[in-house]
Amino acid sequence: MPRDCVSAATTGLPTATLYEIHDCLVLALDATEGDHPRRWQMPEARGYLRHALRDMRRLMGEVAV
Image 1: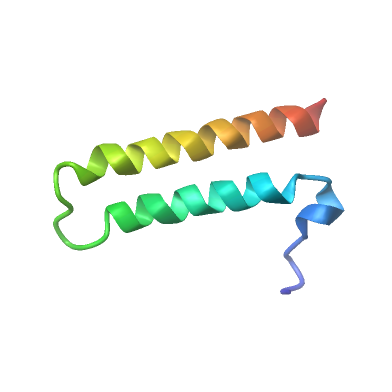
Image 2: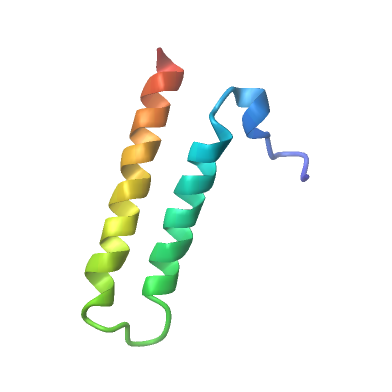
């Protein structure tokens, strides 16, 4: 693990949620892969990004409390 990385266990963040956010971001990137993504791929990618953003906001709200 690189020096500037902090594990989820150290921060108290739920690891499963972090993995889910990571997966959503990877799926969004995969959906837009290529020079000319298909028209149906963009809403799919936006959906994955919205899901990841919702999880991040929820997680950050829990950490702030």
